Image (cartoon, rainbow, N blue to C red):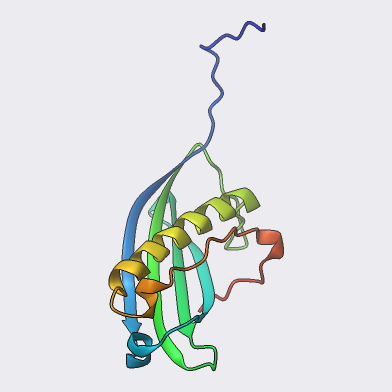
Amino acid sequence: MRNVDMKKKSKSGEIKLHSIRTLEFSYSQDAINKKGDFNTDINFKFDFDESKPKILILSLRLVFTSKDKLPLGRLITENTFKLMNINIPIDDNKINIPDQLTNIILSISYSTARGILIEKGSNSIFGNKPLPIMSFLPSRMKQPNTQ
């Protein structure tokens, strides 16, 4: 058995979900009548609140289409995270977020969007077909769309 000095704790980083906002939610009449699956296009953008450098903002945009490419709806959310004991380097006005932190923040934001979609889209295809569980591994993702 090892002796461990419990008083010597290293400062580990901490992330807190500070706020969740739904910026837009809309769906078409087709989404109410539609049965079956739908496609989801996911775009995201990270930003910092320059007045509060330990605040990281993730905008998540989900656009839904039918299998035959008809528009069904869209959801845009903004999640704000407080970062404690985590340094995010900024080079040439670009945020360099470590892959592990990207995965955590995207996963939390996507799961939150899943719940919002089920609640707000309860009388449409979105209430009956929740978004799948996903892992966001930055090395496997395309470059994010900043629009």
